[in-house]
Structure formats: C-alpha cells, structure tokens
Amino acid sequence: MTGPLRVKTEKLVLACGRQVCFAQYGAMDGTPVVFFQGTPSCRINHPPVSISNEFNARLVVIDRPGFGGSDPSPRRSLVGWAEDVAEVLDHLGIDEFRATGVSGGGPYVLATAWRWSERLLSASVCGGSGPLELPGALRGAAPVRHAGYLLARHLPGLFRWIIRRNFDPRRDAEQFVRHYTAHNPPADQAIIMDPAFRAMYLANFVEAYRQGTEAFADEVILGSKNWGFELSEIRVPIHFWHGELDNSTPLGMSRGMAERVAGSKLTILSGQGHMFVYGYLWREILGGLLASKCSA
Picture 1 (spheres, rainbow, N blue to C red):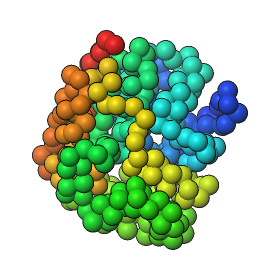
Picture 2 (cartoon, rainbow, N blue to C red):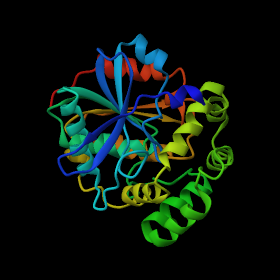
Picture 3 (cartoon, helix red, strand yellow):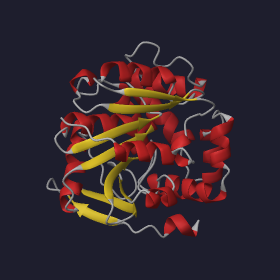
C-alpha cells in the first residue's frame, strides 16, 4: 500500500476555525476538477491518475468533516460543505471549476451546483445517492443497503450503533472490504480485485476512519433527510451516469434526480455496477465533463 500512502496531504484552516485536509492528483497546471468521493472515503480515494493526466485535469479531493484529517462539524449540512469547498478553491487560487462525484459524494456535487452556479462550469454524478423521497429510490437496492437507508432515516441511534459494531476497517481492512462490497455485481468485483486499486481502496478506508465511525454515520443520516435545497432550483445541468446493475445506489435515484434538474442527462451503463468511475469509463466521464461548459 505504499503508493496511496505517498499521497501529499495539504491542510487549510477555514475561517470558522475548522481544519480540512485535501490532496491533488493529475496535472497541477491543468483544468481544475473537484472530485467528491463516496461514503465512507477520504482524500486518498480517486479515479485513475493516468487518465486524469491524459486529459490535463487537476483533481482536488477534500476530506469531508470527520473523515481523514478534516475536523468534525457538529452542525454540518450539504450546503455548508459547498461553502467549505469554495474556501479551499479560493486558497488554491481557483475561480471556475468542474465537479464530479460518486455514490455518497453525489449529494455534495448537487449542493455545490445549487450554491455555486456562477463558478461551476460543468458537473456530473456517477452512481450518486439520491433523496429517499424519490419514487422507487430504493427499488433494487441490496438488502443491507436498503435496511441501512431506512435505519438512518427513521432510527438514527440504532444505525450509529450498528456502524460502530460492524463497519470499522481499522480492525481488519480486508474483512471490511469483503463485507462492505459482498453484494456488488461482477463488474465491481473486477475493479476491487485489481491490485493497484485494492491497495488504494484499503488505505482509503483506514484513513477515512482515522477519527472513528461517527463521520460515516453522520453522512448517511444527513443524506437520508431533507437536503436543504430543491433539485429543481439547480441551474447547472448535471450529467448523471449510472450502472444498470448498481444495487448500492439504485438506478431509480439517478432517474428521479435527472428528471428534476433542468437540462440534465442520464447515461445508463450496460453491465456496470456501482464503481465504474474507477475503471476505464473514467476516460469517457472526464472527457465529457471537460468538453461541457454550462452557463448559469
């Protein structure tokens, strides 16, 4: 796991006094792209750097509150995180940017699009988690994911206890990955078994949980509640990508979100599951993101 652990961590103390940690990948003089990693993940998690370099993209990956080296934020919100992102970008001297996110990072892409339409040139969401109020949002979810969403929404205390007892990779990262991804379809399993990706994946989870399990529970509970903004208010068209076999964040989530964000597009990927952004399809996703330019 020496490769992922050589990631250069950068730190910033925000105006509110909280510290955030982040890392950058790809071409440092390239086009800025903020990558919103999934849940639970941290700055170590990123798509193939070789493809990012190919497109001269500069990926910025930020630890969200309580993950990795970023301080917790007891009153955190999706829109509040968009403010933190802007502060990091200001620190880096980045004005306009692009954004993409995967899984639990999807809501944060959308919050950023809602808040920063004047700075965000284009955005995409890959297998993103959607509001549970959407019709058929949980249809097709693996039983463990279906139960997790409902517990987070209706019995958050019990959900926190289950996460503490059963979902801590610091005890055994290999066992955690086997347990956490056991339901994922074959296309995902092929990505997970790639040695380079697996090393990054394991290191990512251990670092994400450095401060404990609370950030994971906080993020799932936050995503299961009202997001604090309406999808119909987003003025940046979003390109939604979704694997047809995704049983972690079901296809109904992206269908519903694409219907509510004006001008958006939905691409359904045949034979793919939840983790396609970490494979060869990153080339198509990133290429489309960089070719698009949306006006607010």
